[in-house]
Image (cartoon, rainbow, N blue to C red; front, top):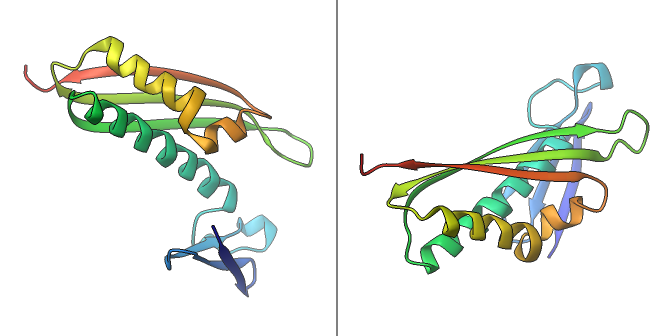
Length: 140
């Protein structure tokens, strides 16, 4: 996996991923940024949410669950001193579909958290991570 990050101006940066995609990043105004793009740490959190949601959807699909939606809301706290690592992260999943089995949803989230999501497992080295979930039955 590769990535090239280039400084654009002020505190704006442009990342080009190994797969050829471009991501803009910018700093907060108090740090010299212009607030034109997400902060790097926001992207780290968003990437972790994408990683774990990807796992949950894939596991539920493989388990033949009729999943129609998956939303992960993530809240994080950071250390007050440098390095300002994440110290606490809460994931709340809202999984929707027809007749989803609660045990299947719980298992998918657990497998992602404990085995598959490299990003959240890595962040778990500095942060306490909590997972909650709810099911929205679309058959009703």
